[in-house]
Amino acid sequence: MSASAQVDRFVHDRLPPPEQWPQLRFDAPELQFPEQLNLVQELLDKAPIKGFTYFPMLRSDTETVTYAEARVRVDRIAHVLVQDLGLVPGNRVLLRGGNSIMMALSMLAVMKAGLVAVATMPLLRAKELGDIIDKSEPAAALCDVALLAELQQAQAAHPVLATVIAFNAPVGAGEPDSLEARATDKHGAFTACPTAATDVALLAFTSGTTGKPKAAVHTHRDVMAACEAWPRHVLRAGPDDVVMGSPPLAFTFGLGGLLIFPMWAGASVYFPGKPYTPDGMAQLMFEVGATICYTAPTFYRQMAPHLKALAAQRGKPSLRICVSAGEALPDATRQLWKDASGIEILDGIGATEMFHIFISSPPDAVRRGAIGQVVPGYVAKVVDDQGCELPVGQVGKLAVQGPTGCKYLGDPRQSNYVRDGWNYPGDAFQQDADGYFFYQARTDDMIITSGYNVGAPEVEDALLKHASVAECAVVGVPDEERGMRVKAFCVLKPGASGDAAMVKALQDHVKASIAPYKYPRDIAFVTSLPRTETGKLQRFKLKTA
Image 1: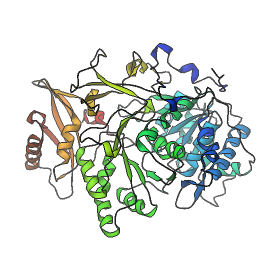
Image 2: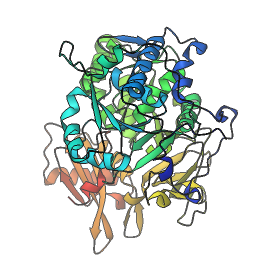
Image 3: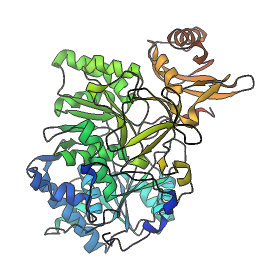
Image 4: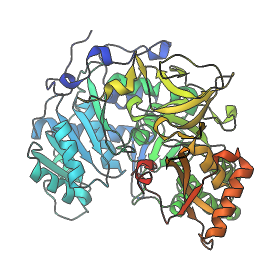
């Protein structure tokens, strides 16, 4: 095995013991990797071999950066990290910023230098950043100037973070110590660190749907293996594609979809100058000529009327693929978007712990109600509490193996996620005879009422088909008689009244749509639902509401 290039062994020394690791599978020819592997060298330095040299790679409202130009800029930032800061392979570098060209280039420079990228969500506050600093012990941080205040507050309380360098300072703001200013003085190619394939590239902190984020460790091989699975066999992007989307680069759904996978395909990515809104994203789809979009189901639902109105005026946009992941995609949302755009959403389920999507089918192989089939390179099964595979059609826990798998940084919850070599993402599924997987709920969100299993997403889908419901979430609440009862939280559309008549109308609607025992006995009307920065619903907050 190739020797590790990472001098700082902090992460390696905190990996789970070997007996708690998932079994990794590299069955396909495209999943055979050399022992020495640096993912940025593969994706960026070797772009000329693939003919991508002068293709656009990163776009914004103010500039377009080719693959060749990106390499020069990444090399300059890498020189700053090594020459100016004296960082050595294996050191952690915290990255804080929204989706921007500089954020993307900085992440690539960190990994090219053999350092470990620790990307953080833009909306995190000082306390949450402090928890991440304590967990990862970064030697330095690269931070968007607009987000400096919270990080500096966290740094003051956690001095293990020695250096913070800002980027994206306004032009003419006089920031002589900014990352851009430092990088301008650096010249010459930066030779990629000769990392072993099993050296660590990044720490990905989970998005907090349970309220307790964990740090998932991913190696250079993990990321390259992910490129050879879902993007190759399902997404099938190409150099002519222009990608846009809302998930943050600090979220592996966004890092894969909005940086790593486009680079693998020679495509380009558009980053907006400000956060997306539903109407703004719909407008930009036309203006930038986007062909691939990544966002969460809620955003597709909110965008649909705006896109439909624009399409009536301007014709269909250039979109060809719309990817949904991060949470369950209700069929009502799928059909609403299809009516507005003419496009069948490409659904998928993945996990931060697995890096990206492992169950998904291309639009031409969609089966209504199903997320899809297992992505080539992975295997999946539905099992009982003892890990025994269940017959077709029975609801159980999802177990997955593939070329990526869960490796938490120093966390006892590793043994909850990985058992007998299988990854347990925490989802309840059933599988049909053709290998299609049907999502039921998070395993801790299954509602067992009077002996019946009720999946919250099924009830939510029924509610969303009512003309008055804009958004909804369903949870189980304790009930002395039934064990649990179904409770719905609904955001109504403008003009609809959240009164007793609406409660009865929604209950009757659900009873007429799915088995009557699944109807919500309690309905609360709210103005918004609690979500993470990546758009995932935080059901645990509703269970105590």
